[in-house]
Length: 241
Image (tube, rainbow, N blue to C red; front, side):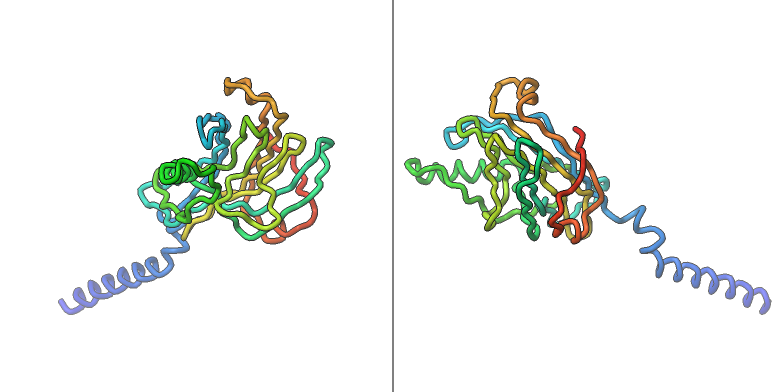
């Protein structure tokens, strides 16, 4: 009787020890599969139109941020711009701008804010300073504004949340850009994206026709290291749509 009790107690103790060890190393064995959030950043090339923004016609390039575990939201997600290369018509990089993370705006953030400002002061000109609440929790996918083409001014504007010294956000038609972006939350980082945008200045109300004039190419890459962000050497890539 005593031997049976000792054997049973030994089995219980062994099981408890195994369970304790598994729990202690759970993060390494199981978290990556069960718990770690995976967020992915991709480009939407549908070129949707937003009408009557500051009495102008805008056409957006959007980024989509998705969470593979939407039942476990990622807190405080933001899409960041880290680097812009400015390229002339001959394909030569004329300037490289590198910076700390500059947040981009979530969809409708700027539009809604501008409409409220115009309601408060209808006679005021279009203001360009967006609100400061940039972060979002990510369960279902969210859309971020990368930039927009403006019909009246024939410029492409990167939708940064605030102005940054020496960052040229309005791109004329004789220049195109190669931008480096990624998304990050409290406990997750997305893939990186290299986005090339070239616009010849022509405008069409047809999205399919407009794609012939406003060309968007993108390449998905691993998150960048600081060495890539800070490098003075242009990034060599042939992005594909």
